[in-house]
Image (tube, rainbow, N blue to C red; front, side, top):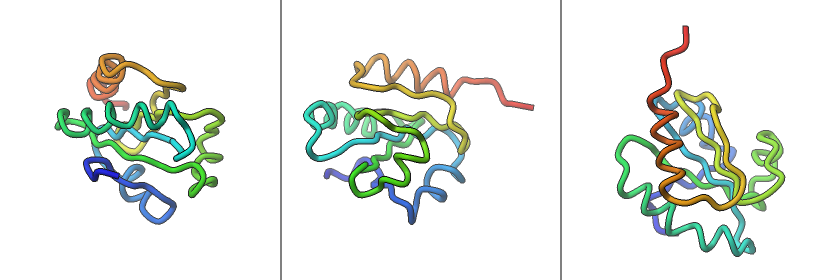
Length: 113
């Protein structure tokens, strides 16, 4: 995998996602998933072009506990985290513009409190 995206697993998920500040997009995928493979270049482009968000990938076959924890039943599934909190999700392939709009909305959300 080209390393513009973070490879996430049980050992680094808490640090890279749950303890991070700002917006993190997490893609749940698998090698055997055709739509996931077709979607990968879009995620790489987002990781390359958008400086305000981090993009990570979780292989559901290698990390079934993380998939179960977030109730990922279909792939690809995208989870949107803001300051370590899950705030949105998209199941299935989405257009780059739709993902960018979601990232912008997540990043522009008002501070809680």
